[in-house]
Length: 323
Image (cartoon, rainbow, N blue to C red; front, side, top):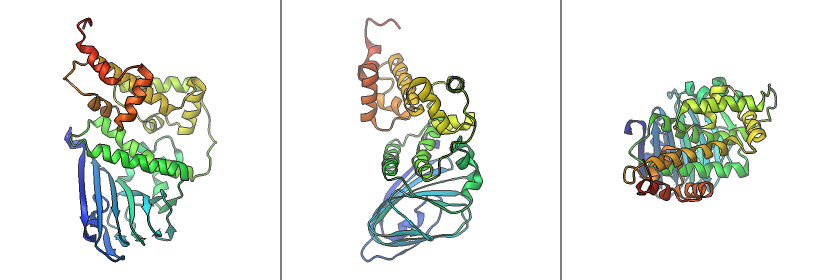
């Protein structure tokens, strides 16, 4: 399983460490601020897809030559002073698009932190599926700057950092299906800030809510027990996330994210109930179903089933249970 997950975390002791600010891409850097540079740099690689999160304490100039054929989408996580990329003045949680084979120029006037994901332009249609404006590769061929919504932007950036922290602690790797789920979860954090800055798109045909839900449930049935991300459903069914949300609200009174979380909780319950204690752990099963905050997962689980996940796992050792 380890072939699907690469983890690399290090402390920075000098600006030279930022040459690898984005995993797989060389960046020319020059220190602008005075003092010894300190910081951290972490990379997560899932196949050809990567997420990098870095932080540093002094001003920095960054330049990237036009030799990288991958799409880079970045987010500003923290900034003590002004940050500018090309002619864009960045605010917290703003998203920056660096298309393939385009030179990039950035200036950080003080200590900052950033996140950047890098992947092949050919993956756009799948990872951004359902959102017509974002699943078109032409959307990402020009440099871009998306202003984040203050509320959703801060939540998205915190979630991105938590995902990085969680995956960094699971160096044993991921299954192919779980790897795809985590890629979509990472992309979604930045996509939220992109969508919030776009004008509403209410055009298009809205299919019958129940007919759409039936198609979703057929897709989930074929997927089996693996975790399925909302963006995967949108791509597979060629439907926008907004349309999907309206359908789930009409039929179930809750959004697709909550519905899929309930489904994953039920899958975990069944796996734990059918497992012999000692053969697996709650944490391992939770991660394979896309939960990266065990405390919050435990709350969801207890609220839904009225018992702790460890109690469900222990059920298999009860002498009164016929297996």
